[in-house]
Length: 178
Image (cartoon, rainbow, N blue to C red; front, side, top):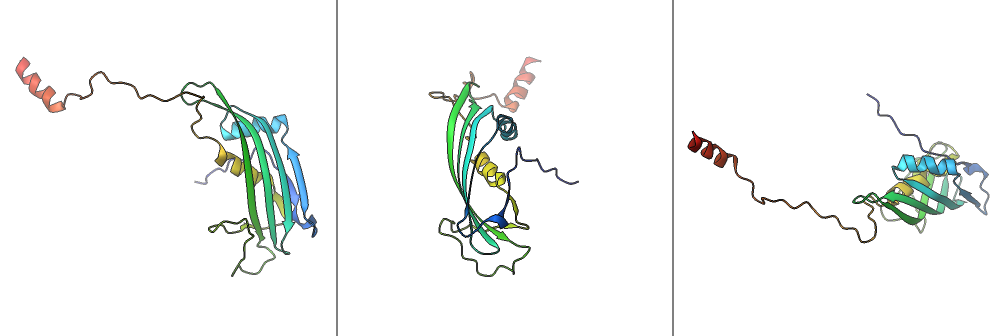
């Protein structure tokens, strides 16, 4: 059985082949319809704004860098009271891209300064890259998994009888009643 992949709520295609040596800058804001789809996709109440500033640079014919700053205002339901909890996410994003279709096999790849120790380039198979994909991925990871309204604490229910009677004690008492 094949697993169904959920479609992203929006896309922003960009031709990496159009980047010149000065790089390229892309700025966009999601429309109200796109923000509604993002909220549904992420399982949250609302996305009030979703704005990205992206800087694309060409490292070589097969290597590209993506630096982005994503700012999103979101509304989630408090996990205790269900009241709306608003927050603003400011997410810096960095991706190194490696075009595999035209490239020789990877041997010793040097990553950019912003790359972490365990990061490897994202492999892409053509120059038409969806800028929305890394934004949405980082957005979903940045959401608070258990949002709480200010001052709200979860309290476990109090049990009247802290030590339940053992099943063997119940059986022993049954013998005495007959």
